[in-house]
Amino acid sequence: MIASIRGVIQSIGNDYLIVETGGIGFLIYAPRSTLSAAGAVGSDIFLHTILIVREDALTLYGFSDNAQRSLFEQLIGVSGVGPKLALSLLSSGTPDEVRSMIAGGDVARLARVPGIGKKTAERIVLELRGKIDFRQLAASGSTSVSALDRELSEILVSLGYSAAEAAAAIASLPSDAPPTLEERLRLALRYFGSA
Image (cartoon, rainbow, N blue to C red; front, side, top):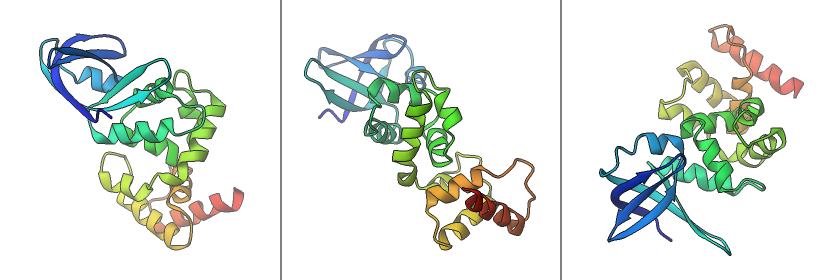
């Protein structure tokens, strides 16, 4: 396995870049965010990579950080999601945004990603929802989860719901939900009653 690569950017395409290291140019497919942060041709770059071995090809996929690579690995583990679809999904937002969509069961937003239809979006949510830890998302600070919702998530988990179920209940709260913990808890519990 090729876990990372450091080299000089030789070329940047729509969904790939070529990195030269040790006199060899590696074609590396990458999400849009990685490509836009890559810099100009001739600049140095470091990428976390995954080598996908197929019968007819050895393909490298590169990521700017381990969070992207980890999410990519989770996504390609979903039945029917290959590397190209996983890259498309990673190009739609940050890893935390994608994880939030999955944890919140936001099938509609996932289905808007090019190449991912409603059935694939539902499969992604079904297979990965329980594997996304909502409390870690909230702690990362990169999502728009308030302290109140973090506390609400902890209460729901202590009541026996999974972190993914808590995330879905919180995501279902209306944007004009009352700012009190008690009211938000009542609305979240109502979500479970209607599910």
